[in-house]
Length: 216
Image 1 (cartoon, rainbow, N blue to C red):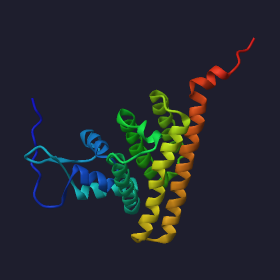
Image 2 (cartoon, one colour):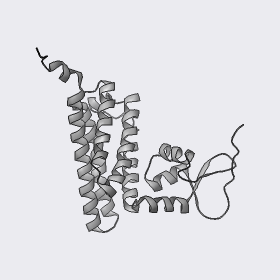
Image 3 (tube, rainbow, N blue to C red):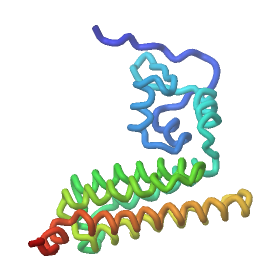
Image 4 (cartoon, one colour):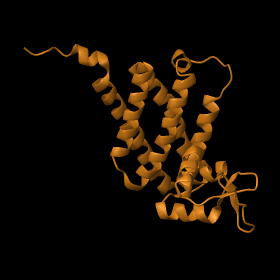
């Protein structure tokens, strides 16, 4: 039996999936999964579109300790990444061309995970977070046959949007002291992810195993 559509109740402010995801600083696909799992309440319009109450989103943010400024940072960075990944037929570096199609989709998904883990890292500074993201980059790179050089070039190329976003947020206003703290956390997360990526690639690459002499 098909699930019954719930009409959005009048009163209050209701946001679309895209706008609600931007408010939380997560990818719409992530928010859809959370809503399906009941982690965040949602309703359906008569046409079947998902809607989220702003008050429910604000309650979730308060419970999870996310800062509005950090949400804006993530949302702005995602916007810059999408613009870069959907650019037209302008000349690109060879490594960029090698990351088109399915490879690009896989790495775009990791970018979303990186930004979500970054938000949590700013709260708890758990070193396992950047390491997990770095190792996921490694797994995708090895599966796609990318060299370590191309992997690092891609990470640094797109990573600069994240670092520049902090300065953009300062220009838009806010407490300079707090943004200095955020920048230090962002830089630490960025660098730890890169180091985990390099270490993981060198440990897992097939050619490194073949180079180890056998005993006996």
